[in-house]
Image 1 (cartoon, rainbow, N blue to C red):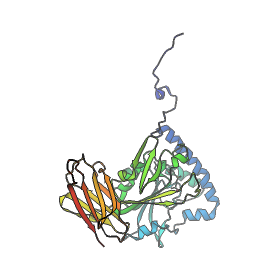
Image 2: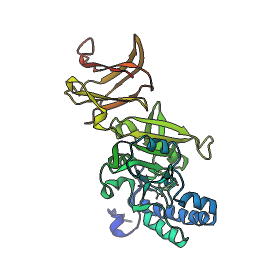
Image 3: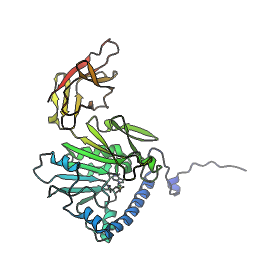
Length: 351
Ligand SMILES: C[S@@+](CC[C@H](N)C(=O)[O-])C[C@H]1O[C@@H](n2cnc3c(N)ncnc32)[C@H](O)[C@@H]1O
């Protein structure tokens, strides 16, 4: 008997399968999973169409945007209708379409937008927002930078092939000084046993958010380049041992005018409403040694972190509760010296 060993190119031989890696599903598998997502919504939209109350909640232009999102929008100085983007909005955005009786300019982006359009048409439902066929990873192909007052996503970022890129894209199209908010179920890929589009988990790690799967993990702090964010844990609709909650993450896209510049290339911003200090180091520093910050009240240390800057973005945010005054000492260790000496600076936050 002879055995022939042959190198086979699956794609050219037309086996129609694509290798699936733990680092993300292949393109063909993803297309199939999107198709099954559309199938799920085909049935769900028919159910919505038959339920007048639910249908009105999702289509009536007068339905108000709920808190806390409405409160975020009310905090802005808005001359005209706020421009709002719902990313991975599904067939009918759940966000609401009015703010204190005034219509908001709502755009819904979803890679299945065209398919949803056909499903809605079959059910005689008109979309009460402007739909755009687009994945979260491609937002800047469709929208100019700094376009929206509020960028939102519910239960969709963990469906993305690259949620880190998706979040950066959401920040790109958000106006400076405004917010990106997303909600994701805790560890949804684990809950779904890595089936379908669920290939990414979001979880908390101390006060931080971690994106992970068996192949990789990355802190949200790194993805957002050190911008301040806060996390709230909401109850999952099925809350139990498996479904442990929903993370609601609010990221502030800081405005240049928020920063106060110090000598030596360091600038800092204090976000009093949300209770964050952000420091940015644009000066020369030694990439070999770690940086630190300490919050100090007299001789008591109230906050402490040792870190490295994220790549080229040398920015870091940490919590300082609203109304509290603190002296923050930032600097860089130099292990050749007995005391930290480089870029050693006090920032006093007063109200
Ligand atoms: C569970 S549904 C959530 C729909 C809606 N946000 C809601 O909460 O009812 C997930 C949505 O994410 C969309 N999705 C899948 N991949 C995406 C991507 N790369 N970018 C944005 N949305 C995506 C799906 O098409 C689907 O409409």
